[in-house]
Image: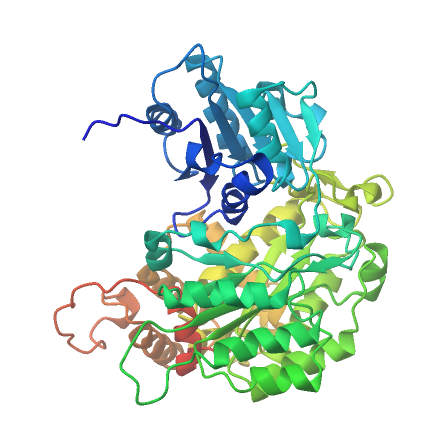
Length: 550
């Protein structure tokens, strides 16, 4: 059907994956009428793409959405710009401006809120809103459409009381509810000053009026939403609010004899050293598969914590993680960052081993990035910090870690994700990290064998080095290739029969259905593969909870 009406305003962004939904753009849509005047929302449309989509296709779709150019009617495209999409967004805007020079391009988002005079993308834009855009974007659109046009290109975002913001959750479509992560929030900001994070610039944390948030969440739930990812930087900061939110979802868990329905899935970011009894009591009531907690430990090195202004009680952190693992069914993602000022490979290894001994389900390993505007930049000279000039601005070397070691760690992190965090190699990983070598004494000239006398971090690093030397790749490694590689590596120092049995158990439990060389003749005959079910967001978590990862 031929389209006869077209929007005057298009809000667009390039998401990392289709499953992601842009919460920020939905806030802008929801507040157009409230802060830009009645009727503005009816003139706007949302378009979301992925960073992998060809740029020419994105531009063609945007132009088709806008319809024909008009000399009398201003057309506006607002882009949400982030560290993961700024490169692709720059090219889209370059092509868009070439095709339609009179188009008004408005940028917003954390990537363009700082150092705006240093970026190619901001030079292409007509206006840039820095900081909060909920109110300022609506006012700017009204001025561009009805006049008088604004004089400033760079517009500092207005930060209103949260009570003055319309909540965005009505902007989630039925398709969003069915196929995407729903991002929600009960607060903004953060009171902590960790210098690698943009939230260090916040003066405090601000909470939305909780009854209003819970009513909006209930509406989403009644519409069929079952996957909620809270983007609050510190969910467990205000325990009264945390408890009420958890109680809200506890009351909506299906009864044991209720008809089968889509499972509830909740994701929260928590600080690790604040877990009072009231919060523990609530967390302990959730069944397996519902709660996922992202816990930012980042480093156990006290001197590094002090350097980056991070306040963290390491003893309480360790105790709380152990309690969660022993007394709740929450799935724990615990984050560590390599490359922080003053952190050496050895001190990071010590922290990694300490965390591994606690036993979280996943250890997420990242390399420090210099986010535009983050205070971490003040350490560059004193600590020899050199960052990549292009996104994501990863640290290239520091005064404590050379460039080769950082590249080596990047491979370690990727292999850790596919071998450990995936939940596919639990029994085999236990052999690698903890088993004593079989047979004769270690030859000190054999670097692979020498690793068996080291801690888990150094053992895995030795495997990582070996995998890189053998395959020269960190991506597109099939489960079968990994099985055969692990067998070759481990049977060099351990009992071949024991290694093969561990790999066999892991491979069968993972559900893989091919035939690795190391397991030929051992795999049971499988029935024909059923029709592929829709992959749920909790698939990886389910592998851990089934007993594959301890």
